[in-house]
Amino acid sequence: MQAVHKPWGVSDLQPWSSVDGTGDAVGELWFERADSHAPTPALLLKLLFTSAPLSIQVHPDDTFARAMGMPNGKSEAWYIISAEPGAQIGVGLNRRITPQELYAAITNGSIVDLVQWRPAAKGDVIFIPAGTIHALGAGIVLAEIQQRSDATFRLFDYGRERELHIDNGVAVANVFPLRPPGLPTRMTPERTVLVASRHFVLERLELPADSSWALLADPETWVLALDGHAAIGSAALSIGQAIFVGGGRASIDVGADGLTALVAYPASGPIDSLLHGLSGQSARPVQPVAADLARLSGLAEART
Image (tube, rainbow, N blue to C red):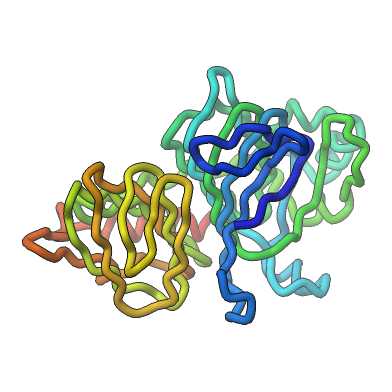
């Protein structure tokens, strides 16, 4: 885990981390593979902690990023872990405008009034496809899964006097409201698909106390504990910790408090065989979900 210091970060990261941000506020925790010589993952998993608004920004898609010499663009998803009363997020615009109007709004600062702001609440899931103007307000803790890229174009920065990227931002930004999100889809009593996009799948696992499971993982699978604890293989997993599973079969032995976790992997749809129950547990489907998953994936694709 790598702590990233940000002026909008926090000093106290409990219960998610024991990292001390008292002297220099911590805004992000990045989870990396322990073996520095291992292949670089396609996805980046983070925890974000905000005490002040982040910049209003936008990310390019793969085509634009590669034309600039970057390996790929950035689509991402947020899972709100906690939000203080009044906390807000901004996703997309509140009305359709022209690129010329967007340029003018960035220049004069009125872009703040064009962003579609909404309250943030625990458990919210927000998919941010490349090209979506977005922003985070203060008082939020969230998990983020993203394409591994630092391709970010700042459009407004609340007077912090950092560089803005107006021309590139206007070139890549969608100048209209974001389409309604697909609803999470319950695949089994234990698995809920939160986002199914072209670049990654994000799921929430809710495993009962003292149960045992087999995780048949993609060669890149991230598991982040939100509540409870478990052992995955020989590694212990508890709140705020993440494990990288490099493919194959891994055992999950859940503790006395159960386990709620996020699971993310690069794929265009959920892996049907991801989770298998042991010791009498069942990962049976709760209902036919093919249509729901197709609708969820289709909406995500439409937004990209």
